[in-house]
Image 1 (cartoon, helix red, strand yellow):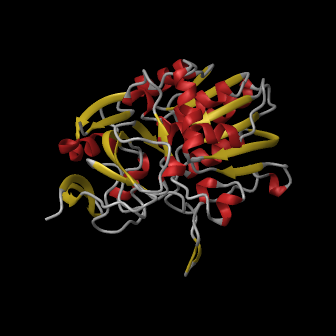
Image 2 (tube, helix red, strand yellow):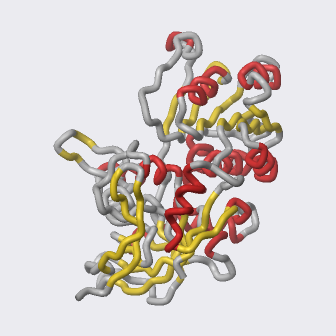
Image 3 (cartoon, helix red, strand yellow):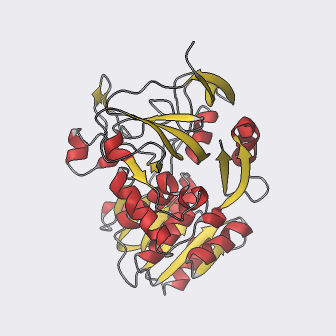
Length: 359
């Protein structure tokens, strides 16, 4: 009998449950890590609800912090027992997209044409991180050692939401002194706010409808917070900018309403950087789009992966430029992950991120 482990698996829409699975066997280019801490992402909730399809029985999760248990024969420069993370996107760096500079889209062609998000493998196309053990493919490219002195929770945001939020700010091409509006201050929006600050934005306007999230946005760099329950956000932002509009807006939720507002506050020639995962078709309003004549840029981003991206993000944490530890608001054991999903999916009790501790 193979050795077994506990894992959170997708059963059917509405059901993710803990079950036993064999500990993965690794190939020469892989590594096996013993997961010590992981978390639940908004994308996992889309999977739970059946809004994003994955195979029945797949282990969910794509944000691992752990310890190397076993290394494939070809993986050099690491050692068993070393603390590591791996990005939610684990590129092979062999695909055309990857070699053309887009590591997040490290996929390939399949029978329906090019599959976007091909670099997202954990909890999507292969077993993921909400388990006691995780197989990391192309480990040489994806394992990133955790600097001494940093806790699991300090680096827990690096594999996905920090990389994604920062990608939103980077794709927006924020310049020193820019005015930036960030729509939605969930975990990714908060990281986009922090990224905009690090990029040198002169004014950051954060939009949400939850008091605790607006307060956290202030902590992470927002100069102005707007509660969409209390004000007309578009007119308020136009007033704040003297009618000019913002240089860049970042959409971090994936709704028609937030996308449209992000477009309506843009200056001519501004950039809308979209991070949200959309569950239905978007409509672009004619007036907000200036009938296609506004020199607007609309750009989407998936979180960059690979060990160098992870190293850079952990360097920001290690240098004290940013502390995302306070974003962990709740902690659960892996055995109790079903309750953690219930809390997180319903956004109860001021939850931002949940640490799932497997050790």
